[in-house]
Image (cartoon, rainbow, N blue to C red):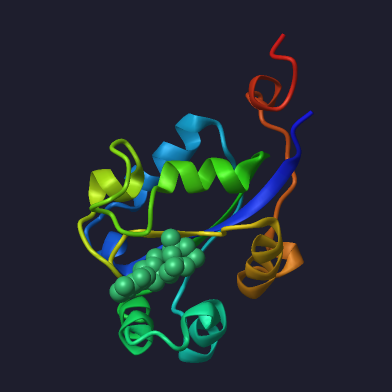
Length: 155
Ligand code: IDP
Ligand code: MG
């Protein structure tokens, strides 16, 4: 039996500027992923230094943080079976020009750092990232009529 997991998604400033927020949320909804947290937030440098800590020695680290502070971002927590891998597949490769056709990054973008979207890459980072952006009382447990198709036997 697959595991029900949670993952963190950030819709980045290029997507906010280009009015792609609805398109991205729609793709997740149509796949059957349950949104259990959603907010707009202006990220500060300290948060980004932590969030992108694995890239701190890269020459583009400063530009990446500047890019991520251009506008507020939309933060989502999604829940579903194997969702960390499922969302990474839907998001596509880091370089949008190398991403598989049909993925969000391939369909909607052409560049880094402006590749539209962030998604947690492992169970461990999802745990840290959800805590970084959401308090416990900003996450919601609720039943949806469609849960039986996405989480149950479907009958
Ligand atoms: P990911 O977002 O696919 O997990 P990471 O390697 O964690 O990829 O990089 C985080 C973000 O840093 C990327 O999504 C992209 O916005 C930016 N980035 C990655 N590589 C480059 C680069 O070579 N130049 C500029 N920005 C980059
Ligand atoms: Mg990453």
